[in-house]
Image (cartoon, rainbow, N blue to C red; front, top):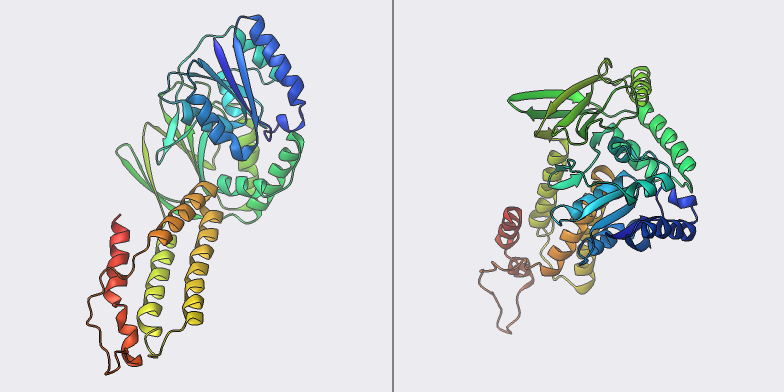
Length: 379
């Protein structure tokens, strides 16, 4: 078979690995069993594009992805429907999905297993259309991951220390959220510090990974505690794989779940839009005057700054992927903006053909701005 490998040099294990030596061992092991191998070594920011490119190559039978669970989720998303198999090289920190597949966690042992392994079918899960192979988190765990990624670490051990520090900071200031869930026929409302949606149920008495990666269910883990001491016991039980008898976790299983997070941020967003619209329609038109170039630039910079500030807060709370999508959409919208499409007011001029100052604000019909906003909400 023809293998194409993509290695994330920033993965937990690969950060401190001699990648040239590893590449030679990979070629030796696979070619000794009659396989062919191509290798691309890329940074974390390039991994998605590299995997998409490899997934589209003709003649490739197996894509070998080396990295943590995030890298493997990206690889799975690129390969779904491609007809190519995915080989998981456990080169992250915990390698939980690889553990669930029964792949040896030592790199050389994992490579040796690929040379003669059979292809098996396993599950992937999706959240709002985005594929994941291990877990999708909301609340406490997601915040812990963001805190960890903001820290500097240069090795797998350093990432573990950063994880402990991030967990401690999260425990010290837990944030509760109101969530409504629809699980099968049941509707559940809960105030929780965190929800984990897992690709199949976690097994007992080991690290949090699924015993059956083809079980066909989602695991819903709802954290029901907000006190520091109880949260510490929760993390301790989680590390030991004590789920079923954990009094701080409510567990459900289903094949589909719908989650609705509390409306606080929707209220903040709608309130901000209404406030800016009021400023645009009332405050800016309260003092009729000729708008010069400097004032126009300042108003433009103000609204751009508001959008950037909103995007930064959104990035910090929702994550890099959603933040990137917001900024991409804003840039496209800004470049294609046509706010004056509905200008229909009659142009008023004096005997010299000049628009009097008192009429100049009305040249931009407020209805054009409002209707333009409504159309953008629809599309």
